[in-house]
Length: 327
Length: 127
Image 1 (cartoon, each protein chain N blue to C red):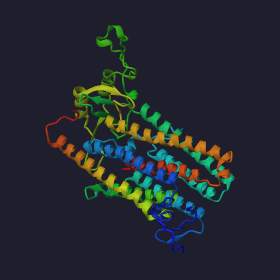
Image 2: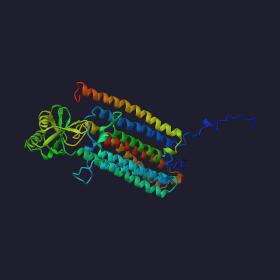
Image 3: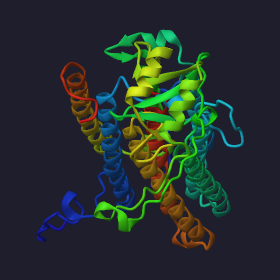
Image 4: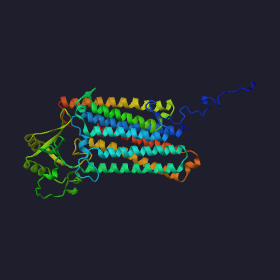
């Protein structure tokens, strides 16, 4: 009690600095607010996906019919199993990450190394699966016809099973002269990819097979795509068909509206890029743990920060999984 | 810093002995939820797709609610939001929830409106 000394009382009070109302270090708090902004980016993508889907809600592709493949199981109809597997890989890598964080709190270097290693492996498996999923989607499966209005016609037999265009298209021998740039108006070069069959070949094969029907993009009230009668199918193919679509790219998509493919590439691509950069960051932190940086620093908080990012990537996948594959 | 963990989930219904057993418990829970989602996604029971609540199929309600449940446990237990102070928790969560709800509401209403224009107006499929 020094009665004669005037004290301003600022050093240890609220405005004196050193005060942490959120009880989180600067780095951790900033990681949280980065995650907030990234979450808003992703929700912007998913909301615009919802917007486009609501625009064409009666003609949107059914994910069950698009993602039906499983590696090494050719011709087996396995809807969603592979995506479910990918989801489990990501959740499990989240578990190993949180175990690494927990081991970091207890300053157990060996355990942090082990769990971080498992996390990196899990992330790599996920990115690889993502690449495989993309490749399968781009390659396509049955092929389809695109109409003049940009809609997709798929082929079924009378039992309701999908039929690939390569199974019924008739080969019409034609001479095809390659288009070169110097002959073209405005120096247009030839399209990069040619489809295996021309529209005429598919049309001829379709007319010759009486058991083939056309399925259009529109859905009935139960959410199943409408299958036309044979007469209506012939009418549709003769008058409305324009070109052959095999697989999916940014302009054409044999599974339905091209917007579906666009959003698929963009959203899963952006998420896959996050996983990829997450793996890279994990690798950097992994080596830092191995050489003992955090042991010397006396805190494994860095593991916690990248852990937050990694869990966020998992969190985003939970939403992408729901809105792309389930709903 | 935040070394002490709150070990109760489901509002105190389940209490784990250590943080590690809690992690495995959450993992089990998330796996069960995912398996339920995938099972519904593959079977798509008719009574869930044919009936709607507030203009959305019951099946989609189930998917979205289960997704939010999963998101909650990932954020609260894997990202340790449960152990943070209330101010940080609210600053992060409510910001995101308000903005996303607003964005989704606006865009979905607009998408539905354009759908109606396509359907009832004289506009071609792709203009």
